[in-house]
Length: 344
Length: 226
Image (cartoon, rainbow over the protein chains, first blue to last red):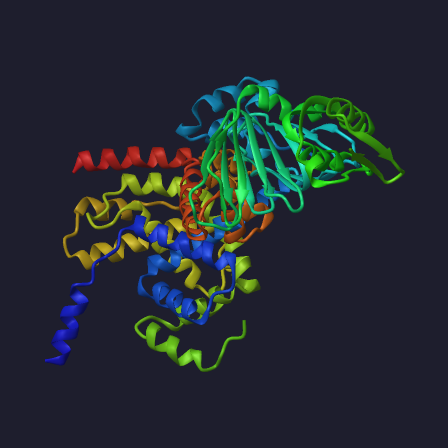
């Protein structure tokens, strides 16, 4: 009786399709490649491999191809997007003989000659060992740099950023300060900027990101749309479009607020070495000047600090600003080597 | 990781119905030791490039209804990896085709409904005539630029997820962080990408040699005579 029941159970065993097995095998191959398996996982894998000879075969096959794809690293630093593919790599005859249907128009391009090949080489083949570079500006310095993909990154005062480009992505870590990004469009590689807990991801657009000690992270989008996400969280990314500002707040991100073109221009005046203010308190302005200069602007009493002013000033001339402020508000100025004091 | 002695009996129970070869393979593969890696490389270089030709052959045979070309190929790999050593194999391609034939035969016998045509195909099968020329052999190898082109067929963000893992060895967690994906999504995504790459690359192997075309012509003629 007991034997009969077991036989019935075996008969009702459903045979899995080769497609399902292929996927499972790939999943296991990815897991095994990623990290050592736990004891339970090993037992699970062992049981699955033993269940059907096709499982063991599919697994070996998946592992073999996975190992082969790692060799793609070998395409190496000699290749860059603009340069033609070295003859050693391209073998026209071989490619045409073996190309399966879905390479379609690329196949035609490759057949046309070496020049056409360079034009049609996919992004994946630009496998330089990741290009890494660090940039930093001094106090009061503004500098524009060109990144390997043509993106222009303008660094404001006292800013440091680490750039890391690879075949899979374009990655910038804004360590401190403020930068404006005019990102070249490259759908094959996302452009990602991290600023502390904020993560901005774009394909091609223009935006600034500000990360200053003590202040929340601030994103300003000039053109296009960017994706903003809080690093490490599972919340969906937020889309922020042009003329919008988002400020990080505590554990979350504020709702995006709209800013008009004038305000956007003011926020970007630093590119010209200028600071532009409209009805801003002397205190806020003084704090901005501190980012660009060693000399601090201080106030004799809090009342003075709360007065507001409108104007455009050279970022590296705090004395000029203090003069302008004292003239328009009827204040007196006392300057020393470390500080400029405004008093009644 | 150290193979605990206490684990072995557990495995023997699971593997019980199958041969001891499987047990050896399990130990090897789960450890991913040196031998495991050599075997992987051997499969990629000497077996995988011939899949395309084997598939063409399998399509010409009348496979029983419960057996598709992928089943046969998976089983062929399964048998090859169960072998303790592949050094004795002179012609991996011929061996692979032979295995496929054997798998077919086993299934036909089990199925009890034997297609007479199916058996005929096998008996006329001439493996020796099927060796590809050296040029064909060279062109079937997994050329790096073919690999790059295959990867380019994968859409984003999965392409980046895969490349970040393969070329920069980031963890699934780190990749998820960068691309706005969960760790699980990265893992599943990479598995799907791998399946797709295997499919794209497998279809670009050595083309069936001309000899096999001729051979089929002969088969048709002899059937007509009967």
